[in-house]
Length: 169
Image 1: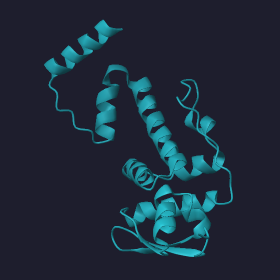
Image 2 (image 1 turned 45 degrees about the vertical axis):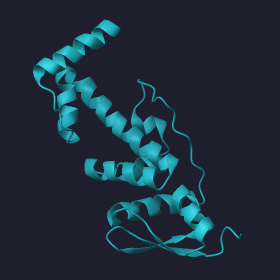
Image 3 (image 1 turned 90 degrees about the horizontal axis):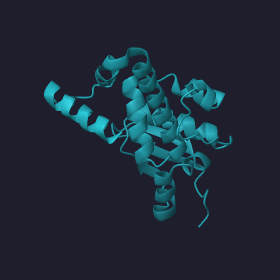
Image 4 (image 1 turned 180 degrees about the vertical axis):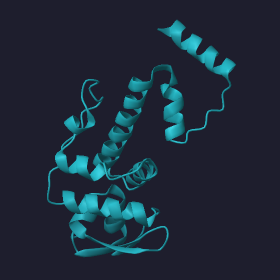
């Protein structure tokens, strides 16, 4: 089957907003590629909110003609985020607030766009690492607060976990 039978693909977000994407860009997503290959339909419903889908399309359209550079994993401790990613990626991902960054992680995982997923996770990891580095013992609480992570453990349970981790070192 011709991989690029349809030149323009219509994507419909979770909130029913229509977007257009080139076939070349769509094929960079494992999900969209499978939909195009298996169903040969130029209209695809995507379980992603419109705000995130718009950014995913921007990313895919950029990389349909540009080579993606792999992100080093694990991220070297002495490196800043801007030192491990390409300039375009750095500018692109730095436009996201925390909520939208987490939504991008979910969207890129769902749409099977590994480089975008790696980029968003690396950015999140670097944010967390910076908070932990700058805030010592209070760092984990600040990370939890910043990313709205619920901590269901009381102080006694936390102390027990810390003691167990210390014993395993």
